[in-house]
Picture 1 (cartoon, rainbow, N blue to C red):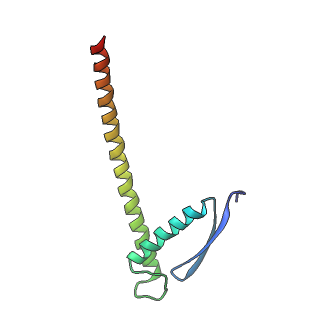
Picture 2: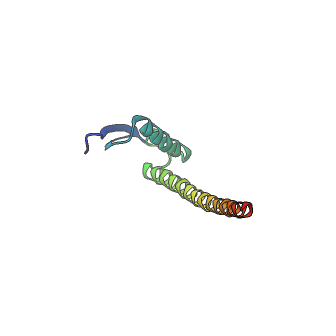
Picture 3: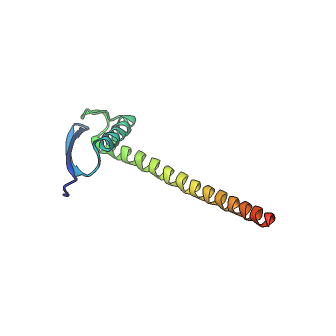
Length: 102
């Protein structure tokens, strides 16, 4: 553990968790909020003993998060390709403008 890390403790699905992280408090709040949101979307809530086993709720939440991450990666890749193509086009246009002005 580095000096910049701190202990984070929270309860999820009726279980207590603790770990050390260098993430800011705001970042951890955002992360935990996202995880709780995913768990609630698959029927978990924060109460154990529901109709869906905790392990299945956790797995479905993980799969949802992984799916969202994969979509973002694909969108980012398309964005980079489109931006690169636009920059190349602008560069070509500027090259022609500079040549024409001489």
